[in-house]
Image (cartoon, rainbow over all chains, first blue to last red):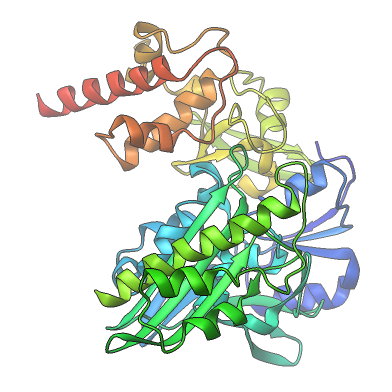
Length: 287
Length: 159
């Protein structure tokens, strides 16, 4: 049993969930897949007075591919990994989410839940940064869209207001000349990223015309790697270009050390995994 | 307290629960189904895996109240008419256990794996069971047990 008691609500619409958030304010937490929140509550690290279980809100679940790729916030990792359409238009998503936790975690954990929780070692934040995803949220004043690059503000902190609900994540499908990849060094027990890197590459002929990199696991929050991205632009994406650019990975980043990996080791791994992610993205962009 | 109705191993149960009751405690303490084990309690070991509406989940990381209306299968529900499930038979035949503590979760996770992938390679079995920890021994015989079950299910299906 969870040590501290709480009040439980299971709304069936977004409007009802937002109204409950408004009523209960800071006391309330949203429960989606529960695979970050419930463990935290069991350990006494979180003790919300009110849980708003959104898993009965059917409209938050599912993938729609219609020009853009719109993924409902409550869509599980398993549903994303198994989605045929996503495998065609954005295969990097399946590749990345299949590396999350284990089968049972993927059956419950959700994309929206992971982004709203913003665990510093979660995989999805790095992906949304590299793929320049838009994050749609609904609040009492209506809906707004936040660019992934503006969404993660600090450890476990996001641009979501306390009375807002994350409802969808919007990605752009990749076309010819574009490629993306996610590689990670997983913690052997939890499968969280000790370092995880997502990379996106666009080629104009043989030259890199766009590059975005998202790094997770290394610091307090997932971050872009602007220096590396700049260094890649205009280059041919060959071995030498990758080696030079990836040496700049982690520059200016506040990298954290813990019992699993020291700060120096993580800094070295950020460079190694950035190079691997870029190499895979370039290869895919070349087709 | 809230009243919930769940169907567990084919039998409907209506019980009152506190919202903070975890599914694993509900199964063990309110329904006396103690085949589902509590291992790490931190969502990592997989000893508590059950199926909710056909999907394997960690019952230590699910609230009982969320399962109102759900169909649940636990290890006690796998054998049919006194016949062991092919996975249970496989763990027996291939010595897939030593102390047996992890076995119910291993089997329930493997059952989900075989639903999704009826003919997995050894690598796919290992990947599919990465959410289940065994602290007695290695995983060799567990992989062999799942392989045995897959072969048996596929042979029966082909007949």
